[in-house]
Length: 308
Image (cartoon, rainbow, N blue to C red):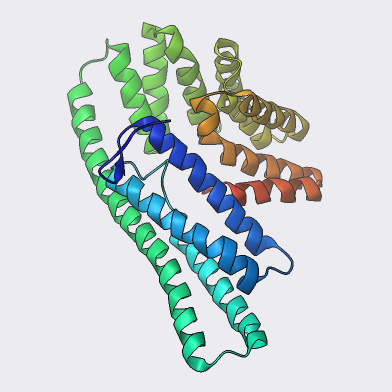
């Protein structure tokens, strides 16, 4: 399961274990607030406040271990503040039934505020760390791209350059590098991702015919990877082929359900797939199915992707 030492986690297995715990905590808390008549004094005090405290502790341990951004991240600050506001409002409404004196009411409210504020502080610290990490990443990417100039005969350099341009949404440059890397030849384990990322970049340029071609090549090279079906589904969605898009998103989620090990622990495409499938369901008039996908995004602790 992983080793523990000096108050922090020492290896990836332990961090993955914490990630599962954070996920369970988030889902339990979200389910509580989504209930029709949540009990803040009884259930909240006994079940939710301890979970908020646990979430803060795990976020701190993950941060101190230097790996908070994916696996041990607390919820976004806006989500925590929403929880805080809802909880305090419910507490104030229910506490009157117990006829407490003002001193007890104020003390208990202060304790609740402190619990949520600690988690908000962890979210703030994460934002600061991510901003610093992003600056460092951009610096390293710029250095790599400068070094890569003139190395047009190295498929690995071209592939890494393409990935950087994809992350920066410089789609034409990404397409150029992916195509040249593929022409030079890549290892078998790299082909699927190169085909898929080329397909996605082409789709952003509205080159849908070519995008579909390379999305299918990605699936042919690795038929069990969920994200590849999502890319093909996206191409169909953008070209108005809603039934075909739905079939691909259904397949993507089915493959995710079949994943094992690390693939099952964290798949960044899962929330995105639910989002785009919700859009397809909305266009097809499947209101209930659309709402289910949107709820799943919320339970995963994610926001819908930004759209241009």
